[in-house]
Amino acid sequence: MAVAIEAAKFLLFLKEHDPRRLELSNLKLQKLLYYSQGYHLAMTNGEPLFDEPIEAWKYGPVVKEIYHKYKKYGDLDIQGIFNWPNIKLKENQMKILGIVWAKFGEYNAGTLVDMTHSETPWLNAWHFSEDKKISTSSMTNYFKKNLPEELFATVR
Image (cartoon, rainbow, N blue to C red; front, side):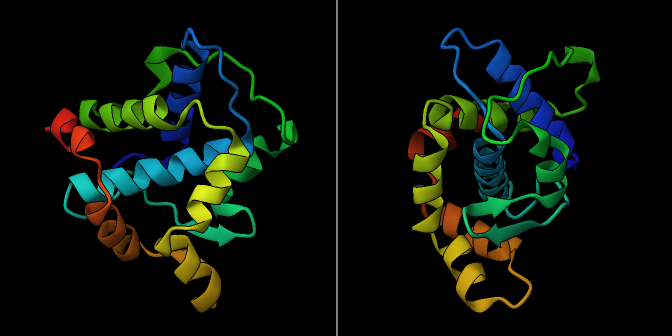
């Protein structure tokens, strides 16, 4: 299992090498980590991509450690070169992160916030959980039921 910072660095690496020149703010990064964790859980029968918890915050799912690492950027694009040799992920983890980037990278942060606010893992944690943690079981159940067929076929 990877740590969340490795997943975040790989998403930033993909952003920097994408010819579409898309922006990746901290808010958007948080949502992409959520979708990456969700798809990984669904495609691996509940095995997390990373161990750090995802919390339900006002503007959607957040990995607190990653939020604090990049909060200095505010709502601006996170800048910086992330070298390939420094990224420690398995091939299937990189595939899932790549799929999430390809599918959701073009959405702006506000659209991703709206999407996550309509999904049961965030809704249940926000409204019914005292600690606001989004459980991996709720994510696994939700994403297994909502996994686009093309994503499932790509990772097999």
